[in-house]
Image (tube, rainbow, N blue to C red; front, side, top):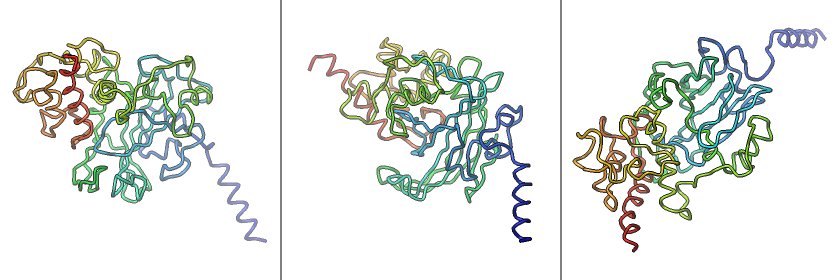
Length: 350
């Protein structure tokens, strides 16, 4: 009897000291980020495998290539608030929103869920004065992810999706590097959650945008939002697939408000001027990054195009994107090469 009373008392005392389950708005909006990922209350377990109530899983039609990492995306929109729909840009998320992205690797990325290990989790939080980025690095036991503003270098060994043995130093970006990719004018902003890259069947088996609307985290959804094809879908046109790939991998920097705006090369989905896309365009600055090529894209000649030359390199000062990868995305390079190779044929009417 005494043991039962002692246990009951312990449970009552613990309950009195516990915070309500779920995301902790005080931690989310705090000026200084918590030392551990668990402190935000975004997960119901320490290993971050189970999102807390109100934290919603999502995925993208085309994810950004990050050295073959598997990515687990979640969004939290504060209770009673909604993101406002935007047709071409990232949705207008309310203050207190958290975008969560965990990067994971398995020994064999042909089976990414088998013995998968979490390596880093990045948070984008909409603070009262704008978006802020916070990287967290997981310990070897995957029991805790700690705030790592200086980033980290991780030695990885795995088999890639094509069956190649990979050994690489994977870079967890520091906070300044986060700002480089997420630059939008003088501020930083999310990249992925745009209507066209969310408009497909999501991880819950429903039309993802309609699901967000039904959950009450998105308002203003039109009847026919835009979409892009999966870049690996060979039933879609080659041009659309290549443009969709460049849109998610390159356009966040190669846009008027991005960090590569001075290049005059704009690779967003809605850009329709050939020169802005690099077709027949001379680079703004010649040098080793051009590979002695004359045009960013020379129609029909991927071997003489700066775009493919830089995509197919890992050398600092040449490789594009500059951040976010240490390996070459062979499938992405092949896709863009095929698109450029077909331009001359299309132009000649063959």
